[in-house]
Image (tube, rainbow, N blue to C red; front, side, top):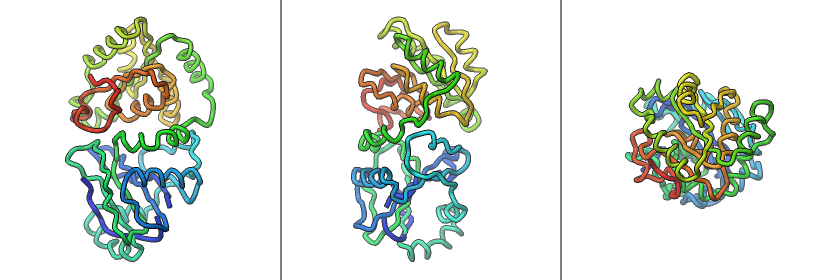
Length: 316
């Protein structure tokens, strides 16, 4: 389900993936796509995705903006777009506050701007019909858009853009070497820090989930080494001390979080948390033989009923 918020400007050529700082379940992490093109409106995700990435690769006016609290780490990937801070005007323009929404309505109409917001009773669901108006010349797509089909549509381009610009250095280089030399390496992600603050302990994955997932990996591959990534170093240290076949990867801070993504992707197989961070870490591994174990319950949602995970990922 999507909510249409009226009108907009100029011409449809992809211009930005933006983080608005709008709250979702207490976490400020919604994304906004701003898309412009001097042609007929795009009415389907397949066409939109391909048009966006074609312009994206050509650097045709495309930019990426970040709001609070994410750091601009995309410069570490082979993305050709410029990175900029979201403007105050755009924050007001996209605000759901009734006074701002009402005040900006004439501007949206004048510049033929349409805003489509992801409003779903069931999250992680693919919405193929964007319902774009004929007169729209500037389109904002606001929401999390967390589902697998759009990524699948542009997989080859996406993998190319999300390759790393630089080689790992120092401790990360040593960890990468270690991962490559181990016969069966598995990344294991413990997501806790901000989840505990925003959701409480109720939606944190249990030790039972990790025990079952680790047992599944051992049953499949025999001797296994688990590389543990976490935003809660104290908890992760205790976890590793209780599991002798685990190695803690704890040298990266928030400003070098992309290095954790790289190291995750180098592992042969993956145990992910209910977190899109480790989702991407597993997805960036391009091995067709990889085994990925994911939680069946993802922040209260049954992942067997939505389109968040690739069909061949194992749910526990």
